[in-house]
Amino acid sequence: MKHTKVRDLLNSTTTLQEVNAKGWVRTFRNNQFIALNDGSTINNIQCVVDFENTPEETLKRITTGAAVSVIGTLVESKGAGQKYEIQVNKLEILGDSDAEKFPMQPKKHSLEFLRENAHLRVRTNAFGAIMRVRSVLSYAVHKYFQDKGFVYVNTPIITGADAEGAGEMFQVTSLPLDNLPKNEEGNIDFKKDFFGKHTNLTVSGQLEGETFAMALGQIYTFGPTFRAENSNTSRHLAEFWMIEPEVAFNDLDDNMDLAEDFIQYVIKYALDNCKDDLKFLEGRLLEEEKSKPQAERSEMALLEKLNFVLENNFKRVSYTEAIDILRDSTPNKKKKFQYLINEWGADLQSEHERFLVEKHFKCPVILYDYPANIKAFYMRLNDNTEPGRETVRAMDILFPGIGEIVGGSEREERYDVLVEKMEKLGIDKEELYWYLDTRRFGSATHAGFGLGFERLVLFVTGMTNIRDVIPFPRTPGSAEF
Image 1: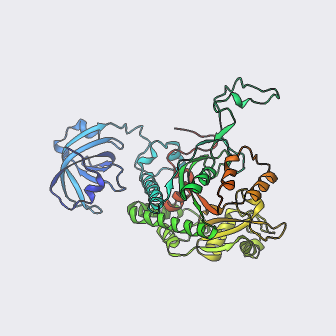
Image 2: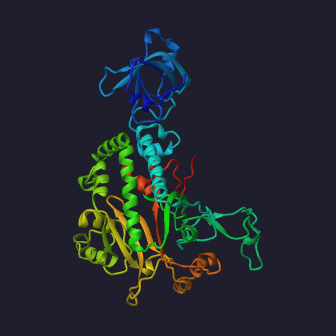
């Protein structure tokens, strides 16, 4: 008999039918009531066992974590909080779970403990909900761009280019580390490496994405990216997923419009399709925040925060205006900021971004026209800016509780200006000849942005540590599983 998903059983419109459900035991009480979950929904279905006619040995094997198959009649439940239950006629243990050793017992576990058991934590309500939301958001990303005629491009994971110019990249090599070949200068001879040159794991698919946008018009990438920053924080991962649309003929205003529309679409999609999971995660967050001091608690509940982003137009503010606001703000004057704002040109920190969103404007904010010297080389230089205060056509989107969630720009499409910037920063023109070619052959205004997918999942689920929104986090000193 074909089994039916728990989600479909709970949404059934007919009862008194014989059904087969398979899943894992969450709890078993009174030798009679199994709470069964198969991962299709956060909700369990209650399976009522006829314990008087079930062998004692079988009852002993119904433990938390055990995989079971039940065949029985779907009936309206007499218990509170559930619409249907299964009156079990036949029960089979598919896989035993040693109750003494199974780590995911039905009790509250610390997030740190769950990270140490990342291979099993998805069996808890919270992580099942997070991963279902992540899956739905991933689908929404593709649906949004596909419906708008974007072409999905798979950019290289192994690359010789450093899109950010940061240099904090993971090297890829097949050279023997205990006997590295050297050239005449005494340096490592990468010509003898697998690719014949020095290569790394990518930090971004943007540069390659631009080349495709200049032929296909509008493209997006959605793939893994890697940063070798030694950052042990709740907002950093060494391996994460990036969404990067790139659009020919778009300027900065078009780019801001696209980013705002895209973010609101995927959040609404999650709200419409993950109601039970988000409701559970909202309750989890409220419970967690009870132990925090009042000043550290969120001003809005999770669903309220998500609707806040949908219902408010994003406020567009220039970097220069934002600096003036921050410099004159009470936290700055009273030295409450960890990083005080004293002058134009400062790189904004998360505390500044959150102040603008949560305290000053009280809505999502898009900052634009940043100082050129704190932004990447490929961003378009603004015309007619005064010497020493040059700005670029960059934009960042700031959200409540999280700060920056999107970074993007209009790209520098002028060949001579781009070459001059690269020379000034010591970026190898020969290494990036292919990128410069897009400015030599049919160059045009174009723009794009990057959205760290885990930051989006973090915001939508209400979690506070980015390690809890990716299946197996990769962080400094940790590459388990």
